[in-house]
Image 1 (cartoon, helix red, strand yellow):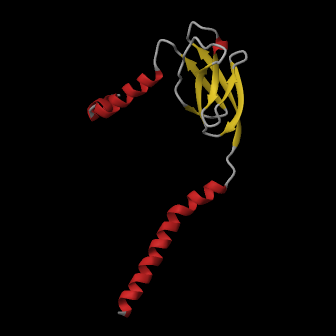
Image 2 (cartoon, helix red, strand yellow; image 1 turned 90 degrees about the vertical axis):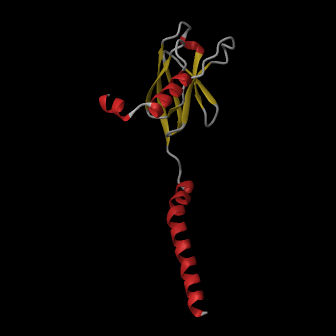
Length: 138
């Protein structure tokens, strides 16, 4: 009977140690302050509409920042999801850009002839269904 009790206690200690090993980094990261950076976004407009029709949408805070002279400057957390979006001043248009992670210097491209979501779907399909020989040739 003693052997089973010792084995049970050792098993519990091992489970607690392994759980702590994997969970402690996550717990510590939750209590650390996230780095807030100044993001400078340049607009490359390939659409026929004016640059004033676009804003940068911070998906985490839902704050929209307009472009002034093809440049938008905002403060947000590093790696926050940012998206090129239509300005509320232009409700007759719709543009749904691809999400990009926040960096200090960024370029966002508005291309009204291409659908970024469809491009990402097609890219995923090409990667999933292409043969390894095709990948080696690229």
